[in-house]
Image 1 (cartoon, rainbow, N blue to C red):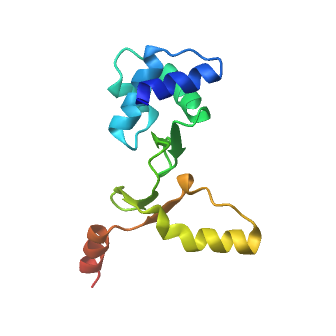
Image 2: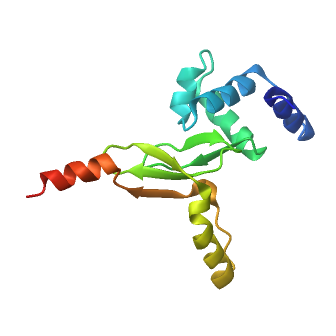
Amino acid sequence: MTHDAELATRLRSRGMRMTPQREHVLTAVRDLGHATPEQISDAVPGVDITTVYRTLEVLEQIGLVRHTHLGHGAPAFRPADDQHVHVVCHSCGRVADAPEALTDELAARLRAEQGFVLDRSHFTVFGRCAECAEHKAAATP
């Protein structure tokens, strides 16, 4: 099934219409990877920011996109099938993707010890990237 057909099917199954705006916003999310609503709006000419926010909400409700927080600003959206953990550098703001499997042991322990089911789509690890850590180490006397 193509991405457009999947979008149309999911929308119609919930009594919603397929619109060009929804299609364009979903395409922008897929093209941009991690993108804020403002970045998505910039990538979709002719669609105002309010429509982008509403469309992202609908796309998340029907399971095609997910959001995460990569810092103090607006959430970042990505395709729902893009499964990974986010690694964010406090110093330069670089965002890297790490394999979701890195959290397997944590998820298993939380489930076994507390019955807690980890939502890895919101899992973000903050620290310093190798370049910033090296720069800081070189600057320390």
